[in-house]
Length: 448
Image (cartoon, rainbow, N blue to C red; front, side):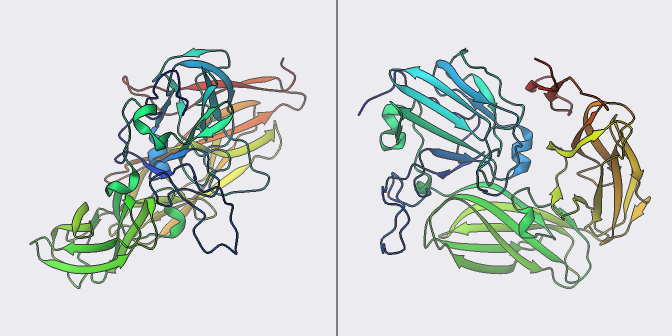
């Protein structure tokens, strides 16, 4: 087997099987899907089925879009010369389509016929250009979900003379720090407690509810994202009262191998539940894998969630902008209506609602929302002057863990004639002293 000029470093910053997980390996079964075949057409290097048909690389995924919004750095796996890049594509794709949309990516040539590629990057995050020399471990961009993608992940593949290489067949040869096989151990990637868990919120992240009141029969869900579950593994859920006694237990069986999978249990609290700290656990084959906690108090607490018109959740600190599209100066203003839900157990009080420069608030919120109630506010892209506008909508309230709920918006207002415009694509969020951000410049109109 040919070997690269240098061993690869792992292409993501963070801890594998803790911060993120491997969702797909290279498919080593050359057969394509065929209804007449009785054997499995999928086979990864470890003999499992953590792959998709014809997959030519390694998919490394985050648990939710919330984790992606925090910024997951993608780095060069080895020194080389950047030979191709692409940026500017929407980075929160959640469905396949035909023809497939373009992805943001970077490709590096390492010499000797070896190349690596990094796909599905976040919009405006690519930090390198073709012809640039990069070192192993140098930042290339951030994880996203652009192109043909159904969730936040990096598709990393290595090729030799144009042919895909299954590097995990000999990890000690290809990697400085060889990663283990995903199915060798079960680990916890993420978890949470909520009282409202529609399937559509899973990919973003369900809105946490950490405090419940003593009202009778309240629904709650404990959810866990696990890496490395094997087919036929026994999954057990336990809920314990504040005094340590068992309140509930349930179990199920894994139907297939999974590099990453969501497991949850939903039930109702008892009548007049005990105040104090409750505990939810998940065990796999009798071994404790994950634990989460929630409080029961006399009055409970408010909990804010913001939804789009299609009822998809908008996360607090969502980085991917809500796009208001393109308008013409002095013409009708594009608008977006947002729904605020108090899915907590006490009154939610609002103290401020602000929009960034270039936007206007057409409909505001009441001062208070009762538990279970919802209301809407409407934001418009102002067409008073031409330009590119971006920033954060901010909703201030007495929600204990999301007191300043904010998310990004953007829109472009063209002049009545041709608009020559350079647009700086940069996150509008505040960056801490030790943090970092990336940006690029795109053009519109007749600028050369």
